[in-house]
Figure (cartoon, one colour):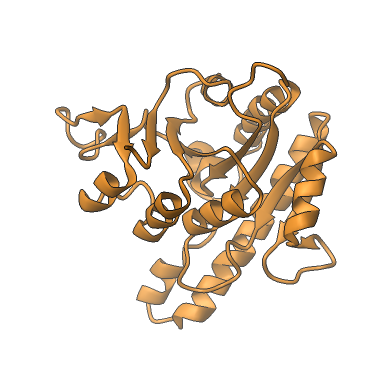
Length: 240
């Protein structure tokens, strides 16, 4: 592991990233491509934890806006992340990796409960750990869960996979003059209301000095390059 910029990373994957072009559910080809990149990162000697979103199945905030109780809707979203973690576990193991799924809610017939020391030990033993069910609490996003798990397990950086090259001042898919930031402070991201992650996640990272790298997962090789410390995407840090 000598010479590696990062010893342990937390990868944040959205549920939509697993759906491919179909936009809903799971796409086998997309899962396999992501798993291949994760396997390459792991084989370089980097320990990996992964927090999965569930938006390819359900978003609690959207469902609650249609009249469903918000707590119930968020719990449904947590179950969506369990589905995604189990799918990713299966594909990763087919790529030769050892894995564990740990859930913030009790689903003990299919995965372990999250226990901090056990999660760290799994990574030390060479297992990729997938964190399901967010924080286990309603009203908190999986971005907040990624931040929390990264801090709890001593990850060097949070790597948030997106479908654009980094953080922009406005949506680059809608505005041709959108400006990409190569570096930001947490406070700048909060003040400018840059919604690539929610405010509570940015604030928690700021208070615990945990950097975030936002990069484009859709470009082949970007995950590997980012994990190895190449200058890609947008780096968000505490600053001076």
